[in-house]
Image (cartoon, rainbow, N blue to C red; front, side):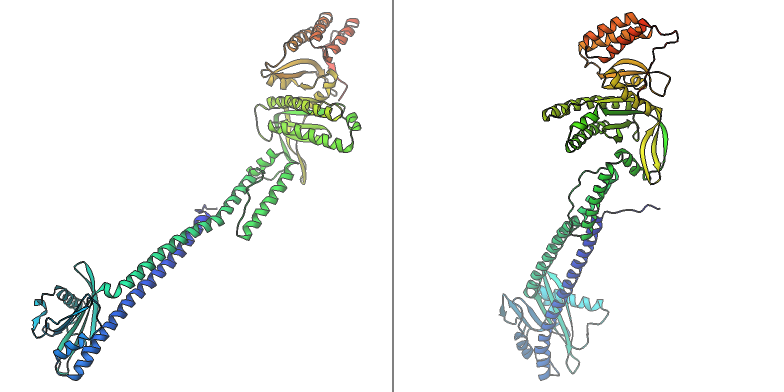
Length: 557
């Protein structure tokens, strides 16, 4: 699918609101401008009608052949002019016949009456400028100065940094003689209130735009923020991060419903997570693939743990206490495994099976398994102390760890599968866990595991054992702790034990037995020393054959 340019919903909403705001504002301003122009036209039209009524209709009716300047002068003085306006009458030669002038609302005498002064010689620059503008307008309109009868023209112009409006009306007597009536008024006399109202209106429009932008931003945020959070929450779920998310509140019902659906999906996936490895599900979601049957060969480390004597412990606890104990034990131990990136395969009663190296690849899977085993034992000491205080029976668990090639993948059938591991490595790990009880140890690891962690941990070569079902012996090692944390007594015990064991493998049983005794003196509770002391005694009394290779055949699973 071709990629398309994406925009955020907030940007879309803001853009839509901006279009609506500016469209509304432009409409208001357009209507205001139209009303403003019409208002000016109405005022000037009304003023021109006054001139027509006083000069043309009254004077020409009484004297249709010739304009009576005295009567005309008296007539125009009756016009309700603005406080600083001027009116003049001109003949066709532009001679001033009569004039009216107001100064600060005071009606001044007609200074041109009977003088027959040309307009250009009047010395009134304002009137001259207005009439020149009138003639220029006539020429622009491609018509002669002789306008149609009773035709008027009005226009604005600037003089001495002030705005004025002029009205010129031309009219004729019955004999065809032409006259002009002119009115010049300052803009502020008639239109200051209109301008003020316009300024107020424009200010209100600006305020409306500002408030609308603010409201639109707030509304877009209220709408887009929940959607942004929803996108973030779905991305978290996509990454299988199922921690409680942000509370989503929206004025939109559909968004609220979507948020509730996401919460229900999160709850469902959290329940699902308890049945399958979360790393596996996270990888499947990330890859966008459906789980299918199949497996692959990988080198992994497998972990088995089991509570020693769990049957007798369960008989001594009430069902409620047993359930609580198992819940706490399995919960604490599982958290340790998961903190070290382990995949919990299954629980079998009190037993736990886990592995490292799948579905997440890791080079240090053996190290992580051994670290988990030691943390396992530390956590159990805390639980044992709490159990003793409650009067519950004491307990401890045994752990077996083995590393090797095996098959890992989805086993089962199409509608019900389990992500697990199979192979000899798994079986041997289970056998190693069981062998712990023979030697009184808590954590035993296989040869390949030991080879990968020997530089990180203190270990003891316990025995060479052929587990049940196998003829070839494998070395098993006790995991003691991290390098440098072993006590001096335990270090001495370990030194004598390993020397004794090497003598034992060389069939030097008397020397080996002596060193086993020395080793036991540093660590009296070591059951492995007792076992080898007894074996040495047996072999001293009944030496093994020449084909003896030191391998102990285990008959227990």
